Length: 264
Image 1 (cartoon, one colour):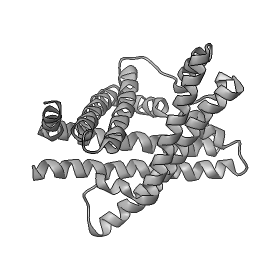
Image 2 (cartoon, rainbow, N blue to C red):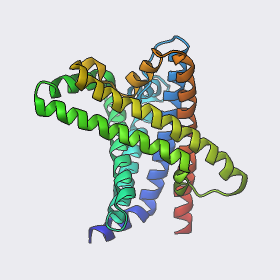
Image 3 (cartoon, helix red, strand yellow):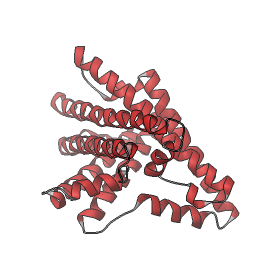
């Protein structure tokens, strides 16, 4: 019953259209994050995460409207991802888990968009530090924080492996020269995001081991940590370009969803 309902939601024309728009929004957000990261590598300020991207959108002439569209579209994309997870969980648990993970990530981005659309603000790094500090006040909380870090690290490794194996191509429906272009974009994007997400996970574990909540951080903190390494700014630019490539790859996913609707 649940699988049938989820399949209907996943294939419904309105849901597919909304999810396609969500993928476009997801792509735009990643491109903005990548551009901010390039600026950080070159010495300018900014937050290279979802909050920074939403602030950039909010500063545009159609900021409020764009934020509402972004929020609704990302929630629709999350619903589509959860429906995908529900329809595949029995026959293929691992892809279902990945789809559910994407859904959670889309909800997070959509929530940030709605917060800014309603006149609020959000600081991803401050929220992460506060959460980490609260968790580290108890032994079980520290263990849970370490587990969260390891899970995030595993997700990053999984994305990196997907980039190497090109398994992301299951999400696109293009052929010929266009397929080769999006294969290159997908590989670059998944490898870069895998590194960035992996660093986020490592920071959580380091925070637990050092008993310093400030060591934990989100995407912005992870990218800024890279600048502390030898040739870190150059590495950050490479990662930023990869994040931008991932954003462009999201447009191929949007096209694949639209093609699914036309075939249906």
